[in-house]
Length: 250
Length: 278
Image (cartoon, rainbow over all chains, first blue to last red; front, side, top):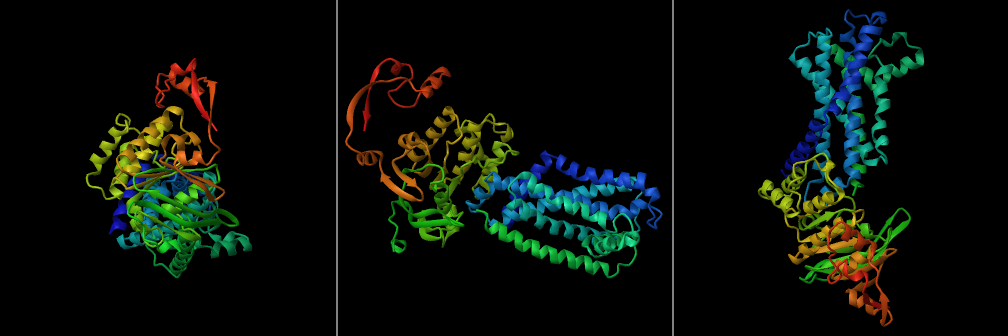
Protein backbone atom coordinates (compact mmCIF):
# COMPACT_ATOMS: atom_id res chain seq x y z
CA UNK A 1 0.00 0.00 0.00
CA UNK A 2 2.75 2.38 1.08
CA UNK A 3 4.77 1.17 -1.93
CA UNK A 4 1.92 1.96 -4.34
CA UNK A 5 1.41 5.39 -2.83
CA UNK A 6 5.13 6.21 -2.89
CA UNK A 7 5.32 5.02 -6.50
CA UNK A 8 2.41 7.30 -7.38
CA UNK A 9 4.04 10.37 -5.79
CA UNK A 10 7.40 9.70 -7.41
CA UNK A 11 5.82 8.89 -10.77
CA UNK A 12 4.01 12.22 -10.56
CA UNK A 13 7.36 13.87 -9.99
CA UNK A 14 9.04 12.39 -13.06
CA UNK A 15 6.02 12.99 -15.24
CA UNK A 16 6.30 16.63 -14.22
CA UNK A 17 9.88 16.52 -15.48
CA UNK A 18 8.64 15.32 -18.85
CA UNK A 19 5.91 17.95 -18.90
CA UNK A 20 8.52 20.65 -18.28
CA UNK A 21 10.98 19.39 -20.84
CA UNK A 22 8.77 18.05 -23.63
CA UNK A 23 11.90 17.98 -25.79
CA UNK A 24 12.61 14.56 -24.27
CA UNK A 25 9.55 13.26 -26.09
CA UNK A 26 9.97 15.39 -29.21
CA UNK A 27 13.61 14.36 -29.63
CA UNK A 28 12.65 10.73 -29.19
CA UNK A 29 9.90 11.00 -31.82
CA UNK A 30 11.66 13.27 -34.30
CA UNK A 31 14.47 10.95 -35.42
CA UNK A 32 12.20 7.98 -36.13
CA UNK A 33 9.81 10.31 -37.97
CA UNK A 34 12.70 11.66 -40.05
CA UNK A 35 13.81 8.08 -40.78
CA UNK A 36 10.28 7.21 -41.76
CA UNK A 37 10.10 10.17 -44.19
CA UNK A 38 13.50 9.25 -45.60
CA UNK A 39 12.71 5.59 -46.08
CA UNK A 40 9.26 6.15 -47.52
CA UNK A 41 9.86 9.14 -49.80
CA UNK A 42 13.54 8.67 -50.70
CA UNK A 43 14.54 5.01 -50.52
CA UNK A 44 11.08 3.49 -50.47
CA UNK A 45 10.52 3.53 -54.23
CA UNK A 46 13.63 1.47 -54.79
CA UNK A 47 13.09 -1.03 -51.98
CA UNK A 48 11.46 -4.29 -53.02
CA UNK A 49 9.62 -5.17 -49.83
CA UNK A 50 6.76 -6.95 -51.51
CA UNK A 51 4.07 -4.60 -50.21
CA UNK A 52 2.07 -1.87 -51.87
CA UNK A 53 2.58 0.57 -49.12
CA UNK A 54 6.09 0.75 -47.74
CA UNK A 55 5.02 2.82 -44.71
CA UNK A 56 2.94 -0.15 -43.53
CA UNK A 57 5.99 -2.36 -43.91
CA UNK A 58 8.48 -0.30 -41.97
CA UNK A 59 6.33 1.21 -39.21
CA UNK A 60 6.99 -1.64 -36.69
CA UNK A 61 10.76 -1.16 -37.03
CA UNK A 62 10.43 2.60 -36.68
CA UNK A 63 8.49 2.15 -33.45
CA UNK A 64 11.19 -0.11 -32.03
CA UNK A 65 13.84 2.47 -32.93
CA UNK A 66 11.80 5.12 -31.13
CA UNK A 67 11.58 2.98 -28.00
CA UNK A 68 15.29 2.10 -28.11
CA UNK A 69 16.19 5.78 -28.21
CA UNK A 70 13.50 6.72 -25.67
CA UNK A 71 14.91 4.52 -22.94
CA UNK A 72 18.23 6.37 -23.01
CA UNK A 73 16.33 9.18 -21.28
CA UNK A 74 15.30 6.71 -18.60
CA UNK A 75 18.96 5.89 -18.01
CA UNK A 76 19.78 9.60 -17.89
CA UNK A 77 16.98 10.32 -15.41
CA UNK A 78 18.14 7.54 -13.09
CA UNK A 79 21.78 8.60 -13.49
CA UNK A 80 20.90 12.21 -12.63
CA UNK A 81 18.93 11.16 -9.55
CA UNK A 82 21.81 9.01 -8.35
CA UNK A 83 24.41 11.71 -8.92
CA UNK A 84 22.31 14.45 -7.35
CA UNK A 85 21.89 12.35 -4.20
CA UNK A 86 18.13 12.21 -4.66
CA UNK A 87 18.13 8.40 -4.57
CA UNK A 88 20.21 8.49 -1.36
CA UNK A 89 17.87 11.04 0.17
CA UNK A 90 14.85 8.86 -0.65
CA UNK A 91 16.60 5.78 0.73
CA UNK A 92 17.26 7.55 4.02
CA UNK A 93 13.56 8.38 4.27
CA UNK A 94 10.71 6.03 5.20
CA UNK A 95 10.07 5.46 1.49
CA UNK A 96 9.72 2.06 -0.13
CA UNK A 97 12.95 1.30 -1.98
CA UNK A 98 11.20 -0.47 -4.83
CA UNK A 99 8.87 2.51 -5.31
CA UNK A 100 11.88 4.68 -6.19
CA UNK A 101 12.78 2.38 -9.06
CA UNK A 102 9.27 1.51 -10.22
CA UNK A 103 8.39 5.18 -10.55
CA UNK A 104 11.18 5.47 -13.11
CA UNK A 105 10.05 2.29 -14.88
CA UNK A 106 6.48 3.58 -15.12
CA UNK A 107 7.70 6.94 -16.40
CA UNK A 108 9.68 5.13 -19.06
CA UNK A 109 6.59 3.16 -20.15
CA UNK A 110 4.44 6.24 -20.23
CA UNK A 111 6.80 8.57 -22.09
CA UNK A 112 7.64 5.92 -24.68
CA UNK A 113 3.95 5.24 -25.18
CA UNK A 114 3.45 8.93 -25.95
CA UNK A 115 6.27 8.87 -28.53
CA UNK A 116 4.81 5.76 -30.14
CA UNK A 117 1.36 7.36 -30.40
CA UNK A 118 2.85 10.50 -31.98
CA UNK A 119 4.76 8.44 -34.56
CA UNK A 120 1.73 6.31 -35.42
CA UNK A 121 -0.18 9.57 -35.90
CA UNK A 122 2.42 10.82 -38.39
CA UNK A 123 2.41 7.43 -40.13
CA UNK A 124 -1.37 7.72 -40.55
CA UNK A 125 -0.85 11.09 -42.23
CA UNK A 126 1.69 9.43 -44.52
CA UNK A 127 -0.83 6.85 -45.61
CA UNK A 128 -0.37 4.08 -43.07
CA UNK A 129 -3.51 1.95 -42.92
CA UNK A 130 -4.19 -1.17 -40.90
CA UNK A 131 -6.90 -3.77 -41.12
CA UNK A 132 -6.21 -4.95 -37.59
CA UNK A 133 -9.10 -5.36 -35.16
CA UNK A 134 -9.13 -4.12 -31.58
CA UNK A 135 -7.67 -7.36 -30.25
CA UNK A 136 -4.77 -7.25 -32.68
CA UNK A 137 -4.11 -3.61 -31.76
CA UNK A 138 -4.10 -4.55 -28.08
CA UNK A 139 -1.62 -7.33 -28.86
CA UNK A 140 0.59 -4.82 -30.69
CA UNK A 141 0.39 -2.42 -27.73
CA UNK A 142 1.21 -5.24 -25.36
CA UNK A 143 4.25 -6.31 -27.38
CA UNK A 144 5.54 -2.74 -27.60
CA UNK A 145 5.07 -2.26 -23.86
CA UNK A 146 6.88 -5.51 -23.13
CA UNK A 147 9.73 -4.42 -25.41
CA UNK A 148 9.83 -1.07 -23.57
CA UNK A 149 9.91 -2.83 -20.20
CA UNK A 150 12.81 -5.08 -21.23
CA UNK A 151 14.86 -2.14 -22.53
CA UNK A 152 13.91 -0.10 -19.46
CA UNK A 153 15.56 -2.65 -17.16
CA UNK A 154 18.68 -2.43 -19.31
CA UNK A 155 18.46 1.35 -18.94
CA UNK A 156 18.16 0.97 -15.16
CA UNK A 157 21.43 -0.98 -15.05
CA UNK A 158 23.14 1.71 -17.09
CA UNK A 159 21.62 4.58 -15.13
CA UNK A 160 22.78 3.11 -11.83
CA UNK A 161 26.28 2.11 -12.91
CA UNK A 162 27.38 4.74 -15.44
CA UNK A 163 30.06 7.17 -14.35
CA UNK A 164 29.23 9.94 -16.80
CA UNK A 165 26.01 11.23 -18.27
CA UNK A 166 27.24 10.40 -21.78
CA UNK A 167 27.93 6.86 -20.68
CA UNK A 168 24.41 6.66 -19.33
CA UNK A 169 22.82 7.63 -22.64
CA UNK A 170 25.25 6.14 -25.18
CA UNK A 171 24.41 2.52 -24.38
CA UNK A 172 21.24 2.88 -26.44
CA UNK A 173 23.06 3.36 -29.76
CA UNK A 174 23.61 -0.34 -30.53
CA UNK A 175 19.98 -0.97 -29.63
CA UNK A 176 18.86 1.77 -32.01
CA UNK A 177 20.96 0.17 -34.72
CA UNK A 178 19.58 -3.33 -34.20
CA UNK A 179 16.41 -2.84 -36.31
CA UNK A 180 18.54 -1.96 -39.37
CA UNK A 181 20.03 -5.45 -39.36
CA UNK A 182 16.67 -7.14 -39.20
CA UNK A 183 13.57 -7.55 -41.31
CA UNK A 184 12.41 -4.09 -40.21
CA UNK A 185 13.21 -2.21 -43.44
CA UNK A 186 13.97 -4.85 -46.04
CA UNK A 187 13.30 -8.57 -46.33
CA UNK A 188 16.27 -10.56 -45.05
CA UNK A 189 16.49 -12.74 -48.24
CA UNK A 190 18.87 -10.45 -50.10
CA UNK A 191 21.39 -10.12 -47.26
CA UNK A 192 24.71 -12.02 -47.45
CA UNK A 193 24.54 -15.25 -45.45
CA UNK A 194 26.33 -14.20 -42.19
CA UNK A 195 24.28 -11.00 -41.97
CA UNK A 196 21.11 -12.86 -42.85
CA UNK A 197 21.72 -15.49 -40.18
CA UNK A 198 22.22 -12.76 -37.61
CA UNK A 199 19.20 -10.80 -38.83
CA UNK A 200 16.91 -13.80 -38.74
CA UNK A 201 17.95 -14.87 -35.27
CA UNK A 202 17.97 -11.60 -33.41
CA UNK A 203 14.95 -10.53 -31.39
CA UNK A 204 13.99 -7.48 -33.46
CA UNK A 205 13.10 -9.60 -36.50
CA UNK A 206 10.73 -11.79 -34.49
CA UNK A 207 9.11 -8.76 -32.86
CA UNK A 208 8.84 -6.82 -36.12
CA UNK A 209 7.38 -9.81 -37.97
CA UNK A 210 4.81 -10.37 -35.21
CA UNK A 211 3.72 -6.72 -35.16
CA UNK A 212 3.60 -6.59 -38.96
CA UNK A 213 1.39 -9.66 -39.09
CA UNK A 214 -0.92 -8.28 -36.40
CA UNK A 215 -1.24 -4.90 -38.17
CA UNK A 216 -1.90 -6.62 -41.51
CA UNK A 217 -4.69 -8.60 -39.91
CA UNK A 218 -2.85 -11.82 -40.77
CA UNK A 219 -2.60 -14.76 -38.36
CA UNK A 220 0.60 -14.64 -36.32
CA UNK A 221 2.86 -17.64 -36.61
CA UNK A 222 5.57 -19.02 -34.39
CA UNK A 223 7.43 -15.69 -34.50
CA UNK A 224 5.28 -14.33 -31.70
CA UNK A 225 6.55 -17.08 -29.38
CA UNK A 226 10.12 -16.38 -30.42
CA UNK A 227 9.50 -12.67 -29.76
CA UNK A 228 7.97 -13.35 -26.35
CA UNK A 229 10.74 -15.77 -25.40
CA UNK A 230 13.37 -13.15 -26.26
CA UNK A 231 11.58 -10.44 -24.31
CA UNK A 232 10.96 -12.55 -21.21
CA UNK A 233 14.47 -14.04 -21.28
CA UNK A 234 16.38 -10.79 -21.75
CA UNK A 235 13.94 -9.03 -19.44
CA UNK A 236 14.53 -11.43 -16.54
CA UNK A 237 18.32 -11.31 -16.91
CA UNK A 238 18.27 -7.49 -17.15
CA UNK A 239 15.95 -7.30 -14.13
CA UNK A 240 18.27 -9.49 -12.07
CA UNK A 241 21.30 -7.35 -12.93
CA UNK A 242 19.34 -4.14 -12.38
CA UNK A 243 18.27 -5.26 -8.90
CA UNK A 244 21.84 -6.27 -8.08
CA UNK A 245 23.07 -2.82 -9.12
CA UNK A 246 20.23 -1.22 -7.15
CA UNK A 247 21.07 -3.13 -3.97
CA UNK A 248 24.58 -1.67 -4.19
CA UNK A 249 23.25 1.86 -4.53
CA UNK A 250 23.35 3.63 -1.18
CA UNK B 1 30.18 -6.45 23.48
CA UNK B 2 28.56 -3.04 23.80
CA UNK B 3 26.02 -3.76 21.07
CA UNK B 4 23.73 -5.43 23.58
CA UNK B 5 24.12 -2.64 26.10
CA UNK B 6 20.83 -0.79 26.65
CA UNK B 7 20.85 2.66 25.14
CA UNK B 8 20.42 5.33 27.76
CA UNK B 9 17.38 7.49 27.04
CA UNK B 10 19.47 10.63 26.67
CA UNK B 11 21.69 9.09 23.96
CA UNK B 12 20.37 9.81 20.47
CA UNK B 13 23.14 8.11 18.48
CA UNK B 14 25.48 5.39 19.61
CA UNK B 15 27.98 3.74 17.30
CA UNK B 16 30.20 0.91 18.47
CA UNK B 17 33.18 -0.46 16.61
CA UNK B 18 32.04 0.50 13.11
CA UNK B 19 34.33 -0.81 10.40
CA UNK B 20 33.86 -0.52 6.68
CA UNK B 21 36.06 -1.29 3.70
CA UNK B 22 35.48 -0.62 0.05
CA UNK B 23 37.30 -3.32 -1.89
CA UNK B 24 40.74 -3.27 -0.25
CA UNK B 25 40.56 0.21 1.19
CA UNK B 26 39.66 0.27 4.88
CA UNK B 27 37.66 3.47 5.33
CA UNK B 28 36.47 2.98 8.90
CA UNK B 29 38.66 1.09 11.39
CA UNK B 30 36.46 0.95 14.47
CA UNK B 31 34.49 4.12 15.04
CA UNK B 32 32.83 4.62 18.42
CA UNK B 33 30.75 7.64 19.17
CA UNK B 34 27.88 8.81 21.32
CA UNK B 35 25.70 11.77 20.64
CA UNK B 36 23.39 13.07 23.35
CA UNK B 37 19.85 14.08 22.65
CA UNK B 38 19.52 17.71 21.59
CA UNK B 39 23.20 18.43 21.11
CA UNK B 40 25.16 19.53 18.07
CA UNK B 41 27.88 17.01 17.48
CA UNK B 42 30.58 17.74 14.92
CA UNK B 43 32.53 15.02 13.19
CA UNK B 44 35.65 16.86 12.18
CA UNK B 45 38.01 15.43 9.61
CA UNK B 46 39.79 16.06 6.36
CA UNK B 47 38.73 14.64 3.01
CA UNK B 48 38.78 10.87 3.01
CA UNK B 49 38.72 10.57 6.80
CA UNK B 50 35.51 8.52 6.66
CA UNK B 51 32.96 11.17 7.60
CA UNK B 52 30.49 10.43 4.82
CA UNK B 53 30.82 6.68 5.31
CA UNK B 54 30.03 7.09 9.01
CA UNK B 55 26.99 9.24 8.24
CA UNK B 56 25.82 6.80 5.56
CA UNK B 57 25.98 3.90 8.02
CA UNK B 58 24.14 5.85 10.71
CA UNK B 59 21.42 6.85 8.23
CA UNK B 60 20.93 3.21 7.06
CA UNK B 61 22.31 3.78 3.55
CA UNK B 62 25.26 1.47 4.11
CA UNK B 63 25.72 -1.62 6.25
CA UNK B 64 28.93 -1.70 8.28
CA UNK B 65 31.28 -4.68 7.91
CA UNK B 66 31.36 -4.94 11.69
CA UNK B 67 30.05 -3.01 14.65
CA UNK B 68 26.60 -1.66 15.37
CA UNK B 69 24.75 1.60 15.48
CA UNK B 70 21.66 2.61 17.41
CA UNK B 71 19.88 5.77 16.30
CA UNK B 72 16.87 7.14 18.17
CA UNK B 73 16.68 3.86 20.08
CA UNK B 74 16.58 1.64 16.97
CA UNK B 75 19.29 -0.60 15.61
CA UNK B 76 20.23 0.48 12.07
CA UNK B 77 20.68 -3.11 10.91
CA UNK B 78 17.65 -4.68 12.52
CA UNK B 79 15.09 -1.89 12.27
CA UNK B 80 16.21 0.39 9.43
CA UNK B 81 12.62 1.48 8.70
CA UNK B 82 12.17 2.76 12.25
CA UNK B 83 15.50 4.56 12.05
CA UNK B 84 14.42 6.23 8.79
CA UNK B 85 11.26 7.48 10.45
CA UNK B 86 13.39 9.10 13.15
CA UNK B 87 16.11 10.72 11.08
CA UNK B 88 16.74 12.82 8.07
CA UNK B 89 19.88 13.13 6.02
CA UNK B 90 21.19 16.17 4.21
CA UNK B 91 23.95 14.83 2.04
CA UNK B 92 27.17 16.42 0.91
CA UNK B 93 25.58 17.85 -2.22
CA UNK B 94 22.16 19.45 -2.20
CA UNK B 95 19.80 16.60 -3.10
CA UNK B 96 17.01 18.69 -4.52
CA UNK B 97 15.05 18.30 -7.70
CA UNK B 98 16.15 21.26 -9.83
CA UNK B 99 13.33 20.84 -12.33
CA UNK B 100 10.67 21.17 -9.66
CA UNK B 101 9.96 24.39 -7.78
CA UNK B 102 11.03 24.78 -4.16
CA UNK B 103 7.45 24.32 -3.06
CA UNK B 104 7.02 21.15 -5.10
CA UNK B 105 10.19 19.69 -3.60
CA UNK B 106 8.87 20.26 -0.09
CA UNK B 107 5.39 18.97 -0.91
CA UNK B 108 6.88 15.80 -2.41
CA UNK B 109 8.92 15.09 0.71
CA UNK B 110 5.93 15.83 2.94
CA UNK B 111 3.76 13.41 0.97
CA UNK B 112 6.39 10.69 1.04
CA UNK B 113 6.78 11.16 4.79
CA UNK B 114 3.02 10.97 5.21
CA UNK B 115 2.84 14.34 6.92
CA UNK B 116 -0.68 15.80 7.16
CA UNK B 117 -1.36 18.91 5.06
CA UNK B 118 1.76 18.92 2.85
CA UNK B 119 0.84 22.27 1.27
CA UNK B 120 0.85 24.06 4.61
CA UNK B 121 4.07 22.35 5.73
CA UNK B 122 5.76 23.49 2.51
CA UNK B 123 4.46 27.01 2.93
CA UNK B 124 5.66 27.25 6.55
CA UNK B 125 9.14 26.00 5.70
CA UNK B 126 9.47 28.35 2.72
CA UNK B 127 8.65 31.29 4.98
CA UNK B 128 10.90 30.11 7.77
CA UNK B 129 13.87 29.81 5.41
CA UNK B 130 13.21 33.06 3.57
CA UNK B 131 12.48 31.21 0.36
CA UNK B 132 8.89 32.24 0.07
CA UNK B 133 9.33 34.62 -2.83
CA UNK B 134 11.37 32.14 -4.86
CA UNK B 135 9.16 29.24 -3.80
CA UNK B 136 7.30 28.91 -7.07
CA UNK B 137 10.34 29.18 -9.31
CA UNK B 138 12.30 26.16 -10.45
CA UNK B 139 15.16 25.38 -8.10
CA UNK B 140 17.51 25.24 -11.08
CA UNK B 141 17.33 29.05 -11.20
CA UNK B 142 18.24 29.54 -7.51
CA UNK B 143 21.59 30.45 -5.96
CA UNK B 144 23.75 27.87 -4.20
CA UNK B 145 22.93 29.23 -0.75
CA UNK B 146 19.20 29.16 -1.39
CA UNK B 147 19.42 25.63 -2.77
CA UNK B 148 21.28 24.49 0.33
CA UNK B 149 18.69 26.13 2.56
CA UNK B 150 15.93 24.32 0.67
CA UNK B 151 17.92 21.11 1.06
CA UNK B 152 17.99 21.60 4.82
CA UNK B 153 14.34 22.66 4.86
CA UNK B 154 13.48 19.37 3.11
CA UNK B 155 15.21 17.56 5.96
CA UNK B 156 12.97 19.26 8.49
CA UNK B 157 9.70 18.05 7.01
CA UNK B 158 8.00 15.87 9.59
CA UNK B 159 10.27 17.21 12.37
CA UNK B 160 12.71 14.29 12.63
CA UNK B 161 14.38 13.90 16.01
CA UNK B 162 17.86 13.37 14.57
CA UNK B 163 19.34 15.24 11.63
CA UNK B 164 22.53 14.30 9.82
CA UNK B 165 24.22 17.11 7.92
CA UNK B 166 27.12 15.97 5.77
CA UNK B 167 29.38 18.96 5.14
CA UNK B 168 26.47 21.39 5.12
CA UNK B 169 28.52 24.45 4.23
CA UNK B 170 31.06 23.06 1.76
CA UNK B 171 30.89 25.11 -1.41
CA UNK B 172 28.89 27.96 0.11
CA UNK B 173 30.03 31.57 0.17
CA UNK B 174 30.60 33.14 3.63
CA UNK B 175 27.14 34.63 3.65
CA UNK B 176 25.51 31.32 2.79
CA UNK B 177 27.60 29.59 5.45
CA UNK B 178 26.41 31.97 8.12
CA UNK B 179 22.79 31.42 7.10
CA UNK B 180 23.26 27.68 7.46
CA UNK B 181 24.97 28.13 10.82
CA UNK B 182 22.08 30.19 12.11
CA UNK B 183 19.62 27.52 10.96
CA UNK B 184 21.56 24.77 12.69
CA UNK B 185 21.75 26.72 15.95
CA UNK B 186 18.00 27.36 15.85
CA UNK B 187 17.25 23.71 15.23
CA UNK B 188 19.35 22.55 18.13
CA UNK B 189 17.67 25.18 20.28
CA UNK B 190 14.36 23.50 19.48
CA UNK B 191 15.65 20.13 20.75
CA UNK B 192 16.72 18.41 17.54
CA UNK B 193 19.83 16.28 17.73
CA UNK B 194 22.30 17.24 15.02
CA UNK B 195 25.31 15.32 13.82
CA UNK B 196 27.24 17.33 11.29
CA UNK B 197 30.44 16.59 9.48
CA UNK B 198 32.85 19.29 8.53
CA UNK B 199 36.40 19.83 7.45
CA UNK B 200 36.41 23.39 8.76
CA UNK B 201 37.82 23.72 12.28
CA UNK B 202 36.14 27.07 12.61
CA UNK B 203 32.75 25.55 11.86
CA UNK B 204 33.10 22.86 14.50
CA UNK B 205 34.31 25.48 16.97
CA UNK B 206 31.46 27.83 16.22
CA UNK B 207 28.59 25.34 16.24
CA UNK B 208 29.28 22.18 18.10
CA UNK B 209 28.58 21.24 21.71
CA UNK B 210 30.94 18.34 21.28
CA UNK B 211 33.49 17.52 18.63
CA UNK B 212 35.02 14.25 17.51
CA UNK B 213 38.16 14.25 15.41
CA UNK B 214 37.97 11.52 12.79
CA UNK B 215 41.23 10.67 11.10
CA UNK B 216 41.92 7.73 8.78
CA UNK B 217 38.87 5.87 9.98
CA UNK B 218 39.24 6.20 13.74
CA UNK B 219 38.18 8.79 16.29
CA UNK B 220 41.36 10.35 17.63
CA UNK B 221 39.79 12.64 20.20
CA UNK B 222 36.34 13.52 21.41
CA UNK B 223 34.92 16.08 23.77
CA UNK B 224 33.81 19.67 24.19
CA UNK B 225 35.98 22.38 22.71
CA UNK B 226 37.36 23.11 26.20
CA UNK B 227 38.16 19.43 26.76
CA UNK B 228 39.92 19.20 23.43
CA UNK B 229 41.90 22.34 24.16
CA UNK B 230 42.90 20.86 27.50
CA UNK B 231 44.63 18.06 25.63
CA UNK B 232 47.19 20.56 24.47
CA UNK B 233 49.92 22.16 26.60
CA UNK B 234 48.64 24.99 28.83
CA UNK B 235 47.90 28.22 27.04
CA UNK B 236 50.06 31.28 27.42
CA UNK B 237 48.77 34.77 26.95
CA UNK B 238 50.25 36.79 24.12
CA UNK B 239 49.38 40.22 22.87
CA UNK B 240 49.10 40.50 19.12
CA UNK B 241 47.93 43.20 16.78
CA UNK B 242 44.78 41.93 15.20
CA UNK B 243 44.12 42.57 11.56
CA UNK B 244 40.63 41.96 10.19
CA UNK B 245 40.32 38.68 8.36
CA UNK B 246 39.42 38.85 4.71
CA UNK B 247 36.09 37.32 5.64
CA UNK B 248 35.32 40.15 8.04
CA UNK B 249 36.29 42.68 5.41
CA UNK B 250 34.14 40.93 2.86
CA UNK B 251 31.13 40.87 5.14
CA UNK B 252 31.64 44.51 6.15
CA UNK B 253 31.89 45.62 2.54
CA UNK B 254 28.69 43.87 1.52
CA UNK B 255 26.97 45.25 4.61
CA UNK B 256 26.55 42.13 6.71
CA UNK B 257 27.49 41.92 10.31
CA UNK B 258 29.79 39.26 11.54
CA UNK B 259 28.03 36.90 13.90
CA UNK B 260 30.95 36.38 16.20
CA UNK B 261 29.96 38.27 19.34
CA UNK B 262 32.08 41.26 20.24
CA UNK B 263 33.97 41.28 16.98
CA UNK B 264 32.31 43.68 14.65
CA UNK B 265 34.23 44.08 11.47
CA UNK B 266 34.95 47.77 11.84
CA UNK B 267 36.11 47.89 15.43
CA UNK B 268 38.84 45.30 15.51
CA UNK B 269 40.79 46.65 12.60
CA UNK B 270 42.97 48.97 14.61
CA UNK B 271 42.76 47.74 18.18
CA UNK B 272 44.94 45.09 19.74
CA UNK B 273 42.98 42.03 20.85
CA UNK B 274 43.87 39.56 23.45
CA UNK B 275 44.30 36.18 21.90
CA UNK B 276 44.85 32.83 23.47
CA UNK B 277 47.63 30.88 21.86
CA UNK B 278 48.63 27.39 22.78
